[in-house]
Length: 548
Image 1: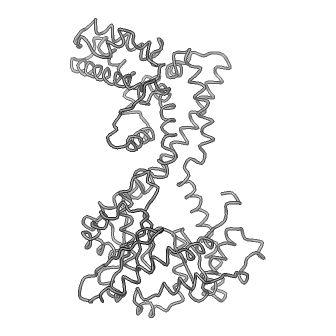
Image 2: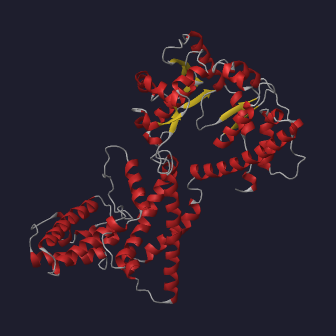
C-alpha cells in the first residue's frame, strides 16, 4: 500500500454515523418495542418480538427484541457457545450461499441460532413481506440484534447479483458478526469506528477491563441506555489535542490515526501504568498492522479490476495479432501452424506468447479470488469484471486450444481445459436473465466466436473423421464417431444461425474448412449419414460466402 493510503477514517465515520438519524431512529424503534414487550419467564423458552415502522425519507425499519429481563445466566442454559450451522436442522440451507471453497462451513452463536430456528415461521412471513422493500433497515439489541443480523443475511441470499439497494443492519450490543463497529466512551463522550475483525475483538477485550467480572455477570444484557449514549455522542464536540501523536516522529500516519482512535474510545485511559502503556503500544501496533492488511484486502476484493487498464494493453497486442493473421489462415490456425520465419515475425510471436501469459496469470488470480468470496456469484467481481473476463476467454482460450492440439493431444474439453475458463463461462451463463437461454438478436457476425471452445469441437470432429477413414477403429468406435459428427453439425449450424462465429471460420485455410472438405468426402465414401442436413446444405451451396 502506498504511503498516501495509510490512513483510517474511523473517527470521521463515527462522527457521520452518530450525527445521522440512522442510529437514533433504529434505537427509538427498539426502545418502543421493549417497552411493550412482556417480561421473560425463566422456565419458558426464549422468545423474540418485532416491530415495523415507516419513516419518510428513511424507509422501513424492522426492529427485533427479546424480553428485557433476559440475562447471561438464562442464556447459558440455552447455550452461549458457537455451533456449526449444519448441526441445526434446516439452518444451514438458508445460509448456504455464505459458504466458500476455503470455508465450506461456518459457526454461529448457539442461542441465537436456536432462537432464529424456533421462530422461522414468523421470520418467513416477514421475509416475504419485506424482501423487496427499499430502503430497509433491520435493527435489534443484544439477542434481538443477533436475530436482526441473521434475518438480514437471509434476505441478502435472495437479492439479485446486480441489485444496488440492499438492506442495512444496525445492532446494539449483540454477538459478533462481520461489519462496522462503533466504539464509544461513556465517560469521555467520544467514539470511533473499526471494521477489521481481529481489531474489534482485541478492543472489546481491552475495554471490558473497565468492568469487574462480577458486575458484568449481574447486569442484564439489555439494560444499557443506548439512547442516552447516542444523545451524548451527538452533542459532543471532540477536542483531541491532549492525545495528539504529532510530536512522535517514529510512527507512521496509520499508527498515529490508530492512537487517536484508541484514545477517543478510552482505551489509553483504561490502561494506565507501565504495563498498561506497554499493552497500549502493542495494541496500537497490532491494530494498525491488521487495519493495513484489511484495507489492502478490501481494495483487492472490491476493485478486482484495478489493473484492468494495464491488462487492456496486453489485449490490444492480441487484437492486433488477430487482425494481421487473416492472411495466414485466421487467428486460430496461424497460431497453431505458425509459418512465420523472419526475425521480426519470430519476435512478434514471442511478444504474443508473453502477452498471453500475462493475461492468463492475471485472470487466473482474479477467478481464484472471486471463487473464495462469500457469495457464490462473486458479486464484486461479476459486477465489474465478468464481461472483461469473457472477452479475455474468447480471445485467449483459442490459442491455448491451438497449443493443445498442436502437441497431438485430444479431449481438451474433458481432459485439458483449465478451471478458470470453465468458471468464467459458468458465471456468464448464470448472469444471463432467466428465460433468455442462448438466444440473441444479432443480425451480423460477431468479431470473436462466442464459444471459446469452438476450435476444440472442430479438432475433435476432425479426429472423428480420421477414425472413420483409417479403417482400424472398432465398430463401436466408428459408430461413436459418426454420432459425434452429426452432433457437431447441429452445434455448428446453431452457432451460424445465431451469427455466433466470426467470419474467419470460413477462410479457405481454416481448420473448419479443412474439416468440412474431409467430411464431405467421407459422406460420399462410406455413407451411413442422413442425405441432407442444414449444415451440409449451407456449405454445399456456399452460402457461407454471404455470412458477415
